[in-house]
Structures are given as C-alpha cells and as structure tokens.
Image (cartoon, rainbow over all chains, first blue to last red; front, side):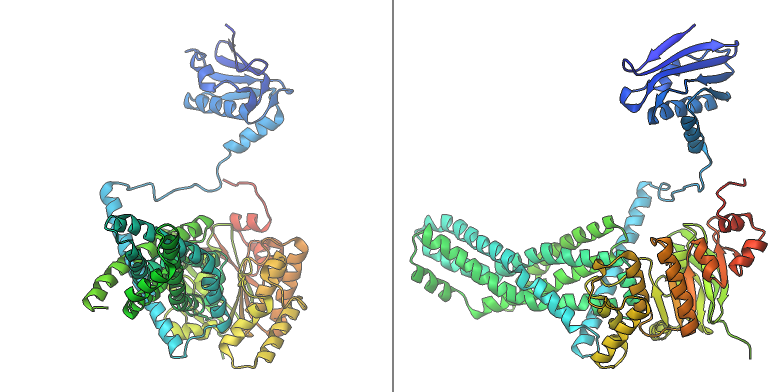
Length: 383
Length: 253
C-alpha cells in the first residue's frame, strides 16, 4: 500500500507505506515550508496506522526545502508515536531540521508553574477581590496621610523641596495648560448659552442667557471643566512620570539616598496644582463668559453692553469664591490621584499605561463626588 | 579585638506574594571586601540586594551594618545607615530631568549646608573621578549607557559612602567598558577604603574583582556555595557551581 498525501501543488508531499511488517514509513519530499501549507500530521496519520505497526520511520531527502512547517509536522508525528509508545527514527532528513527538533525536545532548564491558575472558584475570587479592595483602601489612606504630613512639613519649613522643581511643575500645569483650557472653557460657554437660549426664547426672556451663563460658569462649570481637563492632561502625566521613574529605579535611588520621594516628587506636584487650579479656573470663567457672550450677540442679537450689564448684575462674590474653593479642592484631588497611581505603578510599561488610565478615572470620580458634596455644603452655608 | 563584619545577613527570607525568592541566607561581608553575590538569572540576586538596602522588607531575618540591625532600626536609624551607603543601579537610575552635575549634587544639597559653589565643585570632582569631566551639563538621555552607569557611580559616591552596592554593573556594557568599570571599582575600593557588594553573573568580573562571594541557587532558593571565587572554581564540589563558573552549558542529570 502506498498513499500519497500532498499540500498545495508543488508543495509538501508525503507518501505513507508499511515496511518490514512492523513499521509505518513516511517519505517526505518537495517543499516543506509554511507558505506551501504542509499537510497536518494528524490527518496523514489518522488513516495510516495499522495494528501491526510497532515503530515509525520518517525518511526524507537532504535537499528537502524546509522551514518551521516541516518541524511542526515532525513534532506532531513524534508526539503521536510517543503516545503509542513506538520508537521513531529519522533517515536522510536535513541535519538542521533534526538538530532543531532535538533542541525543542530537550528538557527545559526550569519548569514553569503558575500559582494563579489554581483556586479560581467564585468564592475565592470574591475573597481575593475583597482583600485587594481593603488593602487598596489602606494604601490610599497611608498615601494621603504621608502626603499631608509632607505638606505640613513644607508649610513649617522642614521639608526639602527644590524650588526650581516646583516652579517647573507650576509652569507645566499652569501656563502650558492655557490653550486647552481656553478652548474647552469657551466652547462650554457657548454650549450653555445655546441650550439656555432655546428654552428662554420660548418666554421671550433670552436676555437671561447672560445671567445663566455667568452664574453657571463662575459657580460650577469653570472649575469643573478645568478640573476635568487637568485630570486628563496633568493627572495622567503625573502618573506616567512617576510610574516611569519607578520602572527606571529613579524612585529607588531617591529612597536609598535618604531623600523622601513624597517630599521630592509628590509635594511639589500637589502644591503646584493647588496653586494653579484657582488661577486657571478664573481664566476659564472669563473665557466661558466670553463664549456665552459670543452666542448672545451673534445668534440672539443681544446688545454687547446689555449682555455685560446683565452678567455683572447676576454674579456675586460668593459665586466666585465657591468656584475658586472648588477649583483648589479639585486641583489637590487631581494631583493626589495622579501621584498615588504613579507611585503605586508596577515596573512594566503596561503597568505605567494602567497607572495613567487609573489616575484619570480616579480623578474624575473624585471630582464629581466632591463637587456634589461641596454643592450641598455651600447651599447649607448659604455661600 | 575581634574584627566585626561590615555587613552581616542573618537568617534572611525574601518572599514575594506567595513565592519564596530566597530562604535562610546567612553571610558576612568584611571591611574592604569586594563581595560578589552570584547565581543564575532568576535566582533572586537583585531581590537580595533590595532587601539589603532597605527597598524590600524581608519576610524573616535581618541585615546588620557594623552589628546594628537595619530592619528594626526605625526610620531615622535606617536613614543613618543609608547615609553610609551608595548604590549603583542596573541602568544608572539617573534622574532624567536633571543634568549629570545636578544628579550628583542633589544628595549633597540635601544633606549638607555647603555653599552652592562648593557643591558644584564636588559634583565636578566626582564626575571627573569616573571619567566624565566636561559632561556636567549633559542630560542622562544625551549620553551612552556606559556613561550613564559611570554617572550613576559618581552619584553613588556623592556623600563619600564607605559601602558601595552595584547591581549588575556589567549588564549592557561591551567587554572593554565592562573591564574599565571593574578597574574603577578596584581603584575606588583601594583609594576610598570602601566595602563593595556586587550583584553579577559576569564571570570575567567575578574573577577579576571578587575577594569573597556567595552562590545563590535557583532551585533550592538558598546559598549553596561561599568563598573566594577562584577558590570556588578549583575546590567547589557542587556540580552546578562548577558548571556556572566554567561556563559549561551541558546538563548533568
């Protein structure tokens, strides 16, 4: 009996027969490369075995063209023969291929074992998550505590913070953020005005768009939108910077030199954002009101002076103060979230990416939650 | 009077999660030693180093500097010990936002009241000692890997430590740069009288500079040989240590 099985035309050819009454023989010829789609060993062998077979012989031509395609086929033949406890011999195959096969079959230097694979039942996972969440809460508290101590040390002149670093961070989070804050604040102002106008026009009260935009911007949207921009821009940057410093052992180098990473890296960032956020918020308030005015004058045909007077009349100092307090709080939260995730980052590039993402998510959640709390609180305090 | 070891590791277990990295480590580093911690990749050499310099707390055991416990010393005690220690990290770990001179000057600025001009002089001197005179105003990203390591060494020496730790100093260096770094380590030991601990698996370095060593095994997770590297090469009976020291890749099952 002599069956011939082939892949693509002009490609790998294997003929199967039985010799000496006890051996299955595979004869390989042609091109055994991945591009020619060599036959799958299981398909070839499925029909080939006979009850009398006690060993396997694989014969080939030294001039056989081959690459990993041949090796994959042969490995499958070997494992099938091993399953049947049959010896296997190779005759005339290219030397390179047989060497690579023996390398691949050599005993691994280390046996890999993963502990993570075991114990993945639901209860186990819930337990692990709960322990992880509790540990994470403790870590956050410890970080906030350490950061607070470091800020107090700075305030009392005992912390070692490099002034030049602080100024560089301030410039980065302040002046360099102006273009994006301008764009977002202006556009949010126009959106507020437009949405307000649609409703107020029904009552012929479109002039109150000025009141709506100025109060909403100074009390709420200026601080909120600036904080969201800073969370995406600066919070993520803090996390990535500190995470990368952890990967490159720069934070370890600080620790072993006895320099507190908290004072040296975290405090300047928190202070810089706490100081710059109210300033950015004031600037965003102005741009937001300008955006509203642009819609009011261009689309609603309100007079510029009239719009200005309505705005000035509507807003009080309390509105500004409420907005600025919120901005400072948001600034601290964005900086703490960014620094916390950066300092917690693992030592791989994926971990740094994860830290940046997590910093943004944490910051935005904290912004919204704290905003809700502060809005209620300010209402109670009549601020 | 009996000579005290400069560093002593007693019954140290390093555990990461539920994985035992190293267990029951005991050894002493004498003053003036160039002590090599060697072993195959993955045997926990760097983890042991991190346990010795206060970056990762051990699960059990302690490290003693001149008979003073490190891990029970409290924060201020640990800071006092670390002031005597300089560390050269694998990739130099220079602070990337600072020039080389600022990198070397920072620890001096933080721990002394010296005037800025003197601090600049110190930074310049330390950089000159490692062959980087004239590179004061360069940033870490502007110099080669070998130069970054030497700058890292200059920073490690900034506060004139009497103990220097090196984590894989030869990794990523060509043979000539690696040899120069070895020579530099020898010179620094001789001229500063420092005690040096080197984590490495680079055979040429081990034999060139090591005066004492321990061999960490990646299977039993503990020390399986200790002594002068050359002596180990000739006298150690452990097949794994001999294969490592003779660069013999064959298996003896």
